[in-house]
Image (cartoon, rainbow, N blue to C red; front, side, top):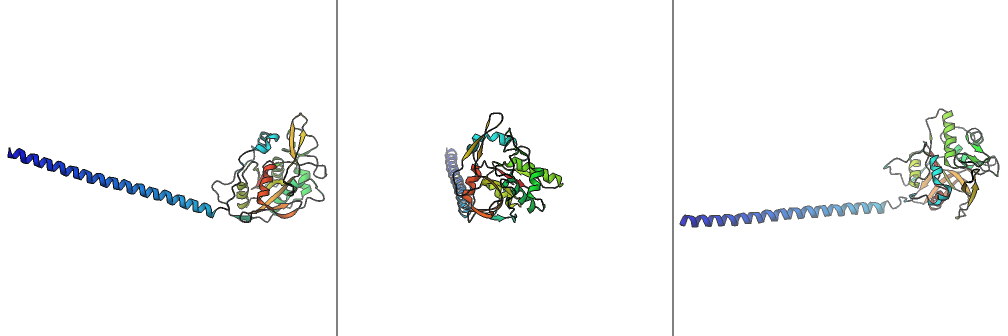
Length: 293
């Protein structure tokens, strides 16, 4: 009986000890989990603070994404995009462009010879910057597709009218990219022109900061915030909506801190424009741009 009593006491003591050890281990585990949770929470808070603080430091980063093509529905963006497929580029992924940058793109006046030839003159500026001593009239005469008829591809694939005449109209990015590539091919050049239409403005700045000159479509009259459009009926009965005061220039610089861009403008010379206005016109003139790289 005594042995059974002593065994019972020992078993009870052992169970009590095991319960105490289990409770101790449970407390240690709970404390460990709590410490991990607190550490993870601190890490999340730290990352949030760091990113939020960095965002405040980088508040000058332009957030000007082209997130729709609503402004160009009347012109059938698919027609423009279909002409873009062969030569399209996106800016380098994950590249952080500096807050300001500029290229010494020279000013070439479109006047008096090419009163409506801002597009081909802008290309002349870029090619001269790259070291090609090409004349704007030679470039227009030999490499720019020009027609007097308003067929499919008018404005997009070719210049309607003549840049030598005040009655000339204009063209968009594909026609200038084609002219550029025809010239560059004739020179056995390593450069090529790429269409960047419908790209975010950040991509234009990225290409420029990588040393690649950009041609961009904008307004001839920055004093008129309202862009009006003319409906041009093509020979097949379809309508192309052409924006008035359409203009073209070489983007030669930007300064985010000051909120300006610099244009080598074939009409006005080397000029600074408000970045906000520049972006507004970039959108209203169908997000047209060409880069040579």
